[in-house]
Amino acid sequence: MNIGQHLEAARADLAGALRDCPGAHPALEAEILMAHALETPRSFLYAHPELEVPQARAHAFRTQVERRMRGEPIAYITGEREFWSLRFRVTPDVLVPRPETELLVETALELLGNSGPARVADLGTGSGAIACALASERRGDEVTGTDISFDALEVARRNAAELSIRNASFVHGSWCDPLEGAYDCIVSNPPYIAEGDPHLGRGDCRFEPRTALTPGGDGLASIQEIARDATSHLVQGGWLLVEHGVEQGPAARAILSAQGYRSVDTCQDLEKRDRVTLGRKA
Image 1 (cartoon, one colour):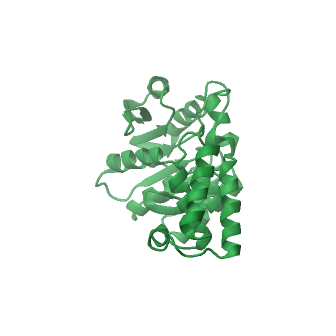
Image 2 (cartoon, one colour):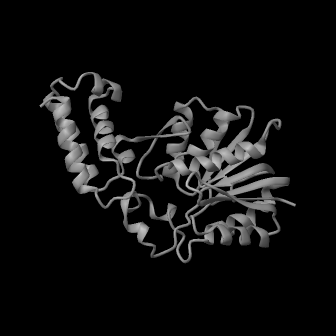
């Protein structure tokens, strides 16, 4: 079979298997997996659909398609995901970076503006995507990522090294615990899905680290802890930004206000849904 025939078959199989999987794109995903199996850019597939696929490559492609048909995140299959126009290595030890989280990076950059060198912390850094994105845009800043998972920290450090980002470091510990000194901006995409939420049993979430998805209960425990402890690690006028669920904007604003933050506000994503809540240390 040639490239075009393999892709046609894979599209049909993925469309059937993933019809109830939120965010699935069978045609695109078939192309991503084929390009990965052939170690070529996707443009090569469009230019040469008539080329026969070597048996070993065809077997690798089919194995990947079957993994995706079982619902495994495509980022875990290929081992990478693009975020903020940077390519990150991704393993099952970390969450798959999502496009909506780019709002957290964008908002932090806007708040930091044209200020001089700043100290920035990313709590629960995972793959290091947020920390590396911020560090890549502000090379003069000192960016620190924290995570309680040693395996996640190894992924983050490898990503920073491969992206040649030298102003980001990663330390072990829970949320603010490893931080030393005061920071101009603290950001976090913590676990916020409520225990028992049906989304935990759907799509990519079934394969991702559970502790990175939900803190249990109503999903707000991590946001409460971060809001409480971050005040001790922010400079006067420093900003805290947290990502949260689309229905948690009012609760997140209430949490930050109760901890004494000022200028509390919530930013919406491209679909006009509450996504990032921020506050400033008085």
